[in-house]
Image 1 (cartoon, rainbow, N blue to C red):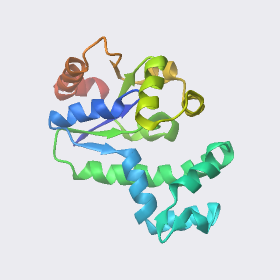
Image 2 (image 1 turned 90 degrees about the horizontal axis):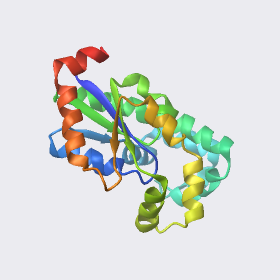
Image 3 (image 1 turned 180 degrees about the vertical axis):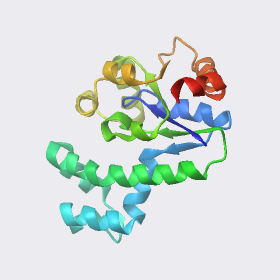
Image 4 (image 1 turned 60 degrees about the vertical axis):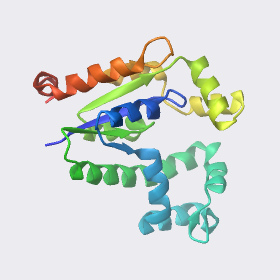
Length: 201
């Protein structure tokens, strides 16, 4: 039976970059954010639910109007929680289905909200990617052209990073001081060893 592993971390932590290193080692990766975007465009039941709760304007010519929906929920915690309660179960189910189709010893689900969505319950291990906040802010400014205030607002909506890391089975430090690849290889080898698996099972 395949071992299910999660990778998580806050905005700008570099979790996607870490996931790509695992891919180089031959580990398949499910990217939850990309999957959620796909499902919100392709899953008929999900589309109906979103339009029912947030209005027909959420879709233009059958495609998700991300900007409209984002603006609708971003500063409204109730609406954001409602949207997450609709999208997360669909993404979790899709990830589980994808996991069952993999033939490698283990596969990875990369997601920002593993603990927040409760999807850690379907995983054998969770890897956290830790990066100091100033570095995360700089990365996101460069990547997304957002202001410092906008990034801080997004960070405030995510679980406290120190709490999140304590909940993880492994932590990779991505601070441009410690090399990421040796940390990934060490975790990869631990998961592949019988000892690593039997400790968790």
